[in-house]
Image (cartoon, rainbow over the protein chains, first blue to last red):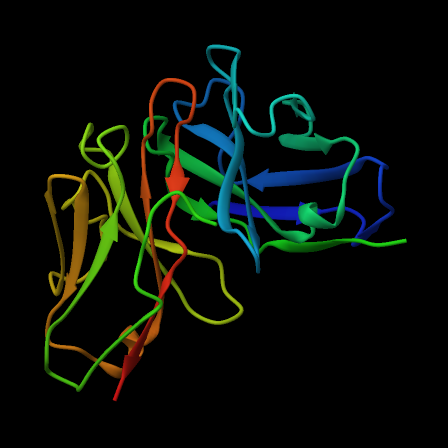
Amino acid sequence: QLQLQESGPGLVKPLETLSLTCTVSGDPLSGSTYYWGWIRQSTGKGLEWIGTFFSSGGAFYYNPSLKSRVTISVDTSKNQFSLTLTSVTAADTAVYYCARHFRITGIFSDRWGQGTLVSVTS
Amino acid sequence: QSALTQPPSASGSPGQSVTISCTGTSSDIGGYKFVSWYQQHPGEAPKLVLYEVAQRPSGVPERFSGSRSGNTASLTVSGLQAEDEADYYCSAYAGSSNFAVFGGGTKLTVL
């Protein structure tokens, strides 16, 4: 049974770097035919796609509005992928979800982690 | 402010049908068939209920249906049940650089 689990600090100071990891069980990232990525949900902006990768092709896709601050990395040996968001502000406070997508066009996400709340505060 | 526009609330009685709209532009909803809808109960992650406008993932009841006309997509829930009470979000492909934009969500209340 596929499971995704986010982990990482729940508090980040302004202008610092947010780092989260998604651990996937039940489906190997290496050679996967699915896409995997991050989506966040804030009170002010609702749901927002952050970025996605396709491990079999080595391709990464980022939301243009976040692209300058976002990096997604993959560790297939641990079956994990990570999100790094630099220079955070209060606007980055949100619940961050990792998810599996079966289609890149539209980011159709059929499996989600439970989400982790990250608050940006001094 | 979300890229796609949804009404903040909708309601219906058990057994009735409710339709939720999602309005975008010719660059997203009007330009591609890659529209999806998610259901979210409090404290839970979103759940995909429709994709490619009207396709239902395995396990989603036939009561959930979708359509698209011009720059507006719609989700219809027929035969409303108590468990349908949730927030619903639409999403659409917006071109080769922005693979998904979302609506602000609609809170569906079953009276």
